[in-house]
Length: 144
Image (cartoon, rainbow, N blue to C red; front, side, top):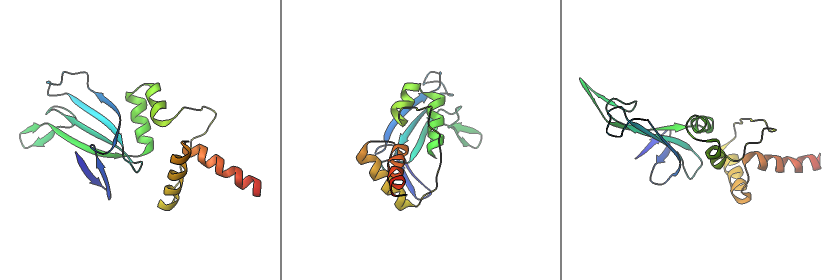
């Protein structure tokens, strides 16, 4: 399935599957549902969900409902929360990197160009955004 949300394309065929969670019901049960968390090549997260006519993904059709599916764009924080809620601690660290309890989480708004530069540095160094920022700040400290 694919969908455009706020000008961004989310496609289950081209994105990387990060994890899957399903209800405890049988797949033949009308209430059965399954969700899968994905990450696009550009680093955006999304949740693909599908389910039976009595599930959270049901589509209302007048007097009845049918099976349905949907894609929801997720922020990094929403993706992390979904993984915390549905997958193991090992899965979390495999997806988002090792948890360092000495570090503090911050959020920043940057221009698309700055995000692209950070993504390039992150990819080439195989480090987290936080590690890239700390590395860059060492140069600022040396010059100051």
